[in-house]
Length: 218
Image (tube, rainbow, N blue to C red; front, side):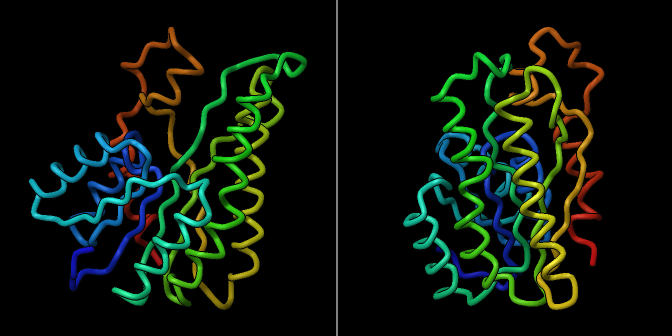
């Protein structure tokens, strides 16, 4: 891990989409700890960050593995002591399906990535944020919509858990923020709407620039 005098931003789900774009944008002011399973995406991110004079620590890890996340957070603590920001964008987009045709493999993967991972990420990352840090989550409300059984259910549960943490820490920190991105031309959205006109959608980089003041704001 690289020594740095900049504040640290941990980005989970940093290899593509909004996570990639936010990690790149935050690199102007923060040292980025970029977590994702896709090594190629992380390497691309590192190239982009270095080209704008920033620095990153790449962590090609699976957020669903508690031992891996514990080791990462312990390493961050031992090297730096704390982080200023956690941006959580890792998500699984289960295929659209009627509820009575839910595939168990996709259901379990949605639970594991979208919800179960929160049960160890928050306890591990929360202490690194201390009282003055911020954790940022992103709502995408499809709960109760037809064919969104996998994604809508698990994403809504993730945000519900984040809201509980937000209420619990409102007066003591860290700050927990829940933001709502505009529809973006991402791989995730393409799985839901493969024939959609992507030219009318926001680019992840543009949406990252729009959301950045809220991500960094007090």
